[in-house]
Image (cartoon, rainbow, N blue to C red; front, side, top):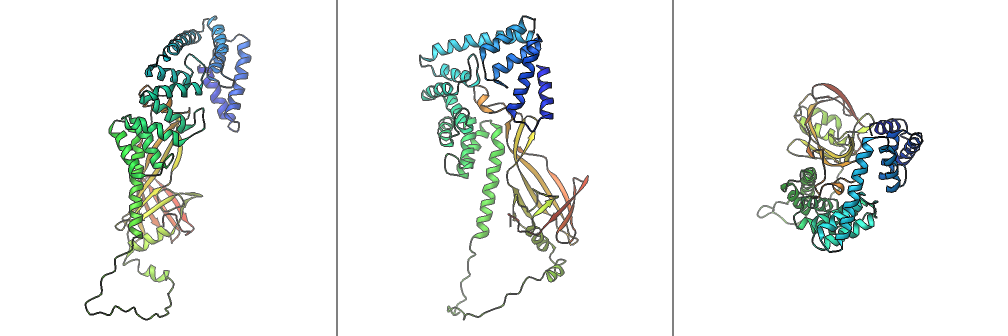
Length: 419
């Protein structure tokens, strides 16, 4: 298996312009030629590709045929795989015979076998049927699996409303992984109306039950609630004080007045007397970039910022990156403060990892019987970073990150989304 992994790595490095199926198809053809010449490792690899449907349609009979050829040459991987497949086939036959008796645990196990191809070819329709029978008899694990199938569109068209229904059944019965997805659907407004209050309630239940994967989403919803409250407070009309006793209540006569344009020169002259407001205004009016990319720790096209007690608070839009075998969804929160009369200020920011999705496909859907999944990336707040920044004119900044290296930032003075 080491050789097939090495070959695949080389193909991925040299043929990134091809689709994934083309890569596997080319690899299968090459392995098939080697297997035909009697190479036992290639024979095992061809069997594995038939079993998993990599580069060729899945076919258990052909998989076992090639495993037998490799095993006949004393390939121990093939010997072990044949034994496992035979055991799984016996396990599947037993589950299939017992499922008709109405045991929800057996029906749940049968659904998993169909879903993951254990002892039988993968069959999503049969998996859904088995899970529905189990869920109809109160199996929360089966309801959760149905939720994941419809949420991710595994073998069916993605259907958030149906996913919401099945996640709800399991969540109300206390399954932490279902509570996570239930809260997530409320936060996303998928399958139901968007409701941050209910999202936070269900995500908090999942975290309290030990499902740490929900922590990042819970923090994200909390931050969004805070941003919405601040925006609402800023837009709320200010109360008008009552007139003093004896004052006339008649409106003053209408007079035309000329509104003077803002005097940037005068503002600059006042900077020494009020450096905080002047520099906050400069930052908020800018859409800050590093090179051609918007930054996530100052007002920019991907950021939303507000002022709080002579400081700036920014919370970015969703971002994504690849880490190992996972796609990470994260946001960035920044605090901008410590303004000085010399045009200096400090930015402290850190990333909030909201979610980690394995590249190999569904995470929790292929997890253990508890439906908890296998998560290797910790969600929540990352390590803080500090920038010491200095203005160079109105449209440029130089920032030293973590006291180690310098960043150059610029702005076209376009109105940022966080203004």
